Length: 400
Image (tube, rainbow, N blue to C red):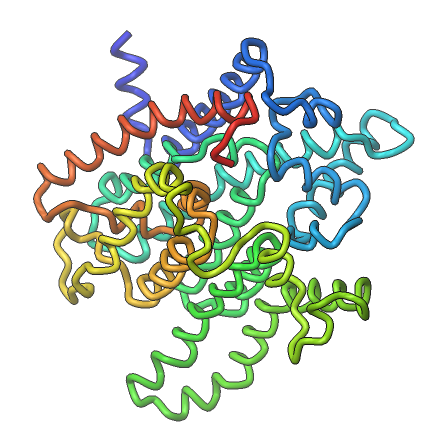
């Protein structure tokens, strides 16, 4: 029994991570199917659309949009990246089975397949990004964040047809390309992320930092001037999905809606506020305290990372070397504050998959012992909560 395990652990980091990612994905699918046999959904509306345990919560909207497009103003809260990918995968599935039209089964399993591939790819991109940002770390130590990534705090949303896997892969791919100073390609990846989720527009800051802020801080004026046209193009590419979605909403619903007469008519903010009760401090009520407690294992270390020391110019190959580069720290700070102050706070469990900071930057101290304590705590909590959350997902119970 020990020999196969030893051979497995002796694999190079990238193949080992790939194998463990696939095993984790298959295990989550198996658990969802088993739990579906044991649990009855509290809300049976999902079963009227699909009997699959993958279709819960926002997946209901993604399936609807993938098959029929945006039919109501409320659905404008969901961006076209994932439904478009699900529709494309569904068309391939329809062609393979010889169907007359794209059915629910094709878009559900097409979305789940794409999401699974994207999540496995995201783990690989996190490992590559870690190697780039911390070149003095041994490869085995650089693998640690990606191994922790395999124990996500919201496993169901990374298994079902949800935005998280595609967003995470696109964002981490773009971050790696930006770290390699391939900013045009990074912008295309970030555009794919912003097509999945509105918060993807914040990723433009990483391109703006590399092409604008860095030359400015180093007083490289000619380089800054040369970068301006390309920087403008890159930023335009990243925000294009958001702008296009808002333009579609305006053409489809205006005039006649309250947001149409605003100086800048943005449907997204109105829909989030009016239909989903999202806004500054709206979640800060006693009734939402349980959701804050659920999100605390992600929010607390995320807040700790904001107060970390700035990166050293001579990092040592120890766990304390996981110091987050300043542009990533700024992006992480903005995202964390958005989650804490102006969102349904429990979605922090899902958002954790979209960036490197939680996995690279969370440490309770500089010693290996404290790093080990945090890693052990995270593994224990992720396993227990992950199993519980899969059961809650199948039973159609919160948190979403």
